[in-house]
Length: 263
Image (cartoon, rainbow, N blue to C red; front, side, top):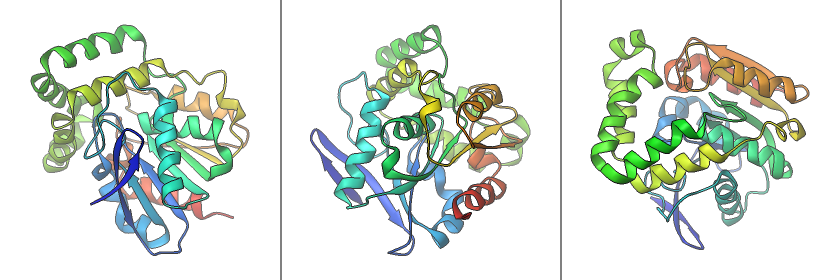
């Protein structure tokens, strides 16, 4: 296991792929860890030095008192890049990871080659959605995380996919049940407070926006808004719910690769 020492704790990361290849950073969704990208790794690691992170509050990374902010999480990414002496990288983030990607594109575009944001929006949900969830998780702890896991299958995957691939659905949703309640709640606050609708048009790096046709958490309309705001942005949509990288699998991987490898 590899860690970068931040000022307030250790952030867990994993590096795969050939040394000297361009770096591709993968950023997880709320309630998962770096293993949510496992389906992409065989093909991504052929072409890139893939840097996967457990976002603060998730996986094996530090859990510090909340609330967090997307800026804080974005600065964590930059701290890891600095610690590993990576001047510039491609970045691909899903959901909360997509918010982190937007922050980086707006505020640290000089550190990016290309940017991919998936199943996300410039603003995700309202406080009326997030605040009760935060209160429940902080009150009920691990019991609440198990309940969230059981409810997440319907949000993260379409019913036909979940029925046909029960082991995959369980592997991914089990990540939520083992996430720190304090870390999860702190990250919920970061997602709640993020609003890039007035800033996203300032992104100047090449951008690909990916959506899932059946995504009720971050519907395609939010993805199309980002694409419309960013000059030259590309758009792709797959039959999937919220975790399109898992459900669309190889098709998702091939679309991201074609974007990143294009001149």
